[in-house]
Structures are given as structure tokens and as C-alpha cells.
Length: 314
Image (cartoon, rainbow, N blue to C red):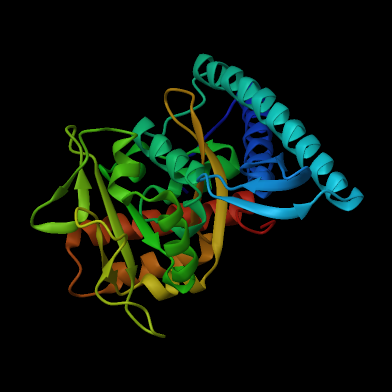
């Protein structure tokens, strides 16, 4: 049996409330995408025309004034104002939760990890990536209200698996953002730079690395794959376990940083994580130190599944 440190009742209550606020904020922000941009009435030749303004500034006329267009305009403006007010209130509440998280020492995930995932989510890219490898453990332990041994979660890199099954949607989002993925990460830490000898890895001044990986190319996947049109950006590297990780499904859970900040971690389904870690540990070509850690992590998640029903309610 591996020792787990369970959260205190106060920490548990705080986590439940904080996670609910984070999820509510994400849901509201997603709903707000439907009313991006704005609408206004324009006078032309004595007639009023309803104009829709896209978030990037382009304008489209929706036609001359009619009772139906007036109703559309009113619904749009009312819904936009309501959602903006709700987002503002939820952000205020989340900031308070972050202070409480820190006061109760609720979080232990690296701040750079949480800031990176939060930035991806805010950019609309979170659904296109899955956190694979060691950092997935933060999602599993958070769901169970425990902390696993520090040596199980110790690592200085995050592996982000790009879901190439939704590649067209990913490209559409990247084109709308009109920026590189590296630039998104630089908003977290401006010292992130691509490694010259490993263009799927960015590293910051503290030595923390972000690897962008993908499944082995199949079903028309682009290959090789640069994640944006910008020259200075990641080239996602193929990993043999990519397809199995994607096909096994996802597990999403709020994780708290040492600073109290929060983000949703999208990880492989626990059963899939265990299976793949066991397979990696059994490979004769696997580095012995990595194989040992693979076995330990598989054992940890297996025990969480047995003792805390991890994954059964997902």
C-alpha cells in the first residue's frame, strides 16, 4: 500500500467550492463565445440597417430594420450584457478562492504548469491538448482529495498531446488567434524559447520544458506537423503511445498551484494511463530509471482507482 496524504476537511470544502467556481467561469466564457463582437444600427439613405461586428472587426449587414431584427438585436445585447456581468462576478469570486487556496496551502502543482494550462484554455485551445505523463497525476490526486508522494510527481517538463483527430478545428482556432503556440506560452513566461536541436520542446530560464507531441501519423494526419503558420513554432513529434492515449478517453479535473491559482487539467482516462505506463515499464528498450518511475506511477493510479473509485464517475 502506498501512503496518501488526505486533504483536511477545511481544504476539501475549499477545493469543492473553488472548483465549482472555476467550472462555472469556463462554462460562462464558452457561452459568451456565441455573442462575440457586437451589433449596432446604421443609418443609410433614411433607412436603419442592423450591422454585426465580428470579434476581429469585420462588419456584416443583416438587413433593413424589421421587428424580427429588432428582437434579434435586443436578445443579443441583453444576453451579452448578462454574460459579461456573470463573467466579471465569477472572476472576482475565483480571485478570492485563489487567496483562500494559498492560505490553506491547498495547492502543490507548479505555478508554471497551471498558468500554461489556464492560458491555453483562455485562448480556446485547451480542448485540443491532453496532459500526458507525470503531470496527469495532479488531476488524479485532486479528484480523490489526496496527495501522492512527492517523488512520484517530481518532473521539470510537461508533455502536451495534440489531438490530431480534430486538426481542422485546431487550425481554425489558431488562424483566429493569428499567433504562434510559442507566443501563447510566452505570455506565461517570456523566457520560453524553442530548443534548436529539438523543435518540439520549449524551455524557460528555470529549465522547465514544454513538449508538444502527437500520435503517429495516420488517417490523413499532416506529417510533419508544424502547429501554426509561423516559422518560429513547435513541430509536434510523434509518440508511439499517442493513439492509445487519445482513444482511451479523457479525464478533466481542476488542479491548484502552490500560488493558489487554478486550471483544468485534461489528462488520459486513469485506466488508459495505467495500461500505457505498465506497457512502457515492460519494454526492454526502456531506460531503467524511467521504467521504474512508470511502474510506480501505474501502481499509484491503480491504488487510487481501487481505494477512491477514481474514474468511475466520469
